[in-house]
Picture 1 (tube, rainbow, N blue to C red):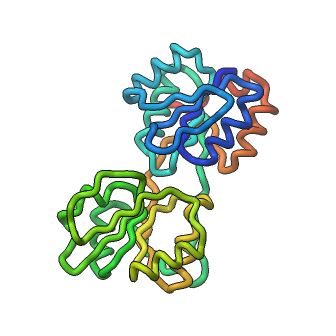
Picture 2 (picture 1 turned 180 degrees about the vertical axis):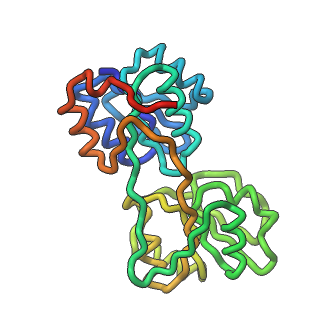
Length: 252
């Protein structure tokens, strides 16, 4: 079976490694982070929207498309759904379980950037862990505020009210506690990404009794099959008959 995995998270790498020994796997990443070393083929870069992805599926004779992208990569997930339908192949999706608040957490849920900015007004030294979006709004930083932003390598605008840390996880709890204390952070701004690589920041916020402004996940399209554990996804491939795997079920 020829499988295209749309990756970008650790579970996607695990999925690719598990399947590469028994299937022809192409692992696709946008190319914004580290390029993984895998036994199968690695493809870097975009496809040109859903139409470009559908053409790639047909050209490469892909039998199964797997969406194992970041929970906030909604555009890619929607393109995957449209492309799979256009190419007439099934779409399976890995949906990482979200984090849930624990006793002692002070989570303040927001659904978009405008709501996030309203929620962050009450604080002076927020710590942003929501990707590159804050860099597009540095002109909106209030005079009383200083933002700390952690993200992948990026061009940093010249402003005294912003500090950028270029780093990728995993991050340890002692390191997160030290970071919050060193920068005198009074609120954490986060996405509900799930997973363990960056979860320590939430524990650190709880320890220091800091509020967390949580940007909730965008809605994602349906898939023919969806899984919340990689092991179950791999097991389903190994146990199912080919005709069961290759029959698309989701509609437009």
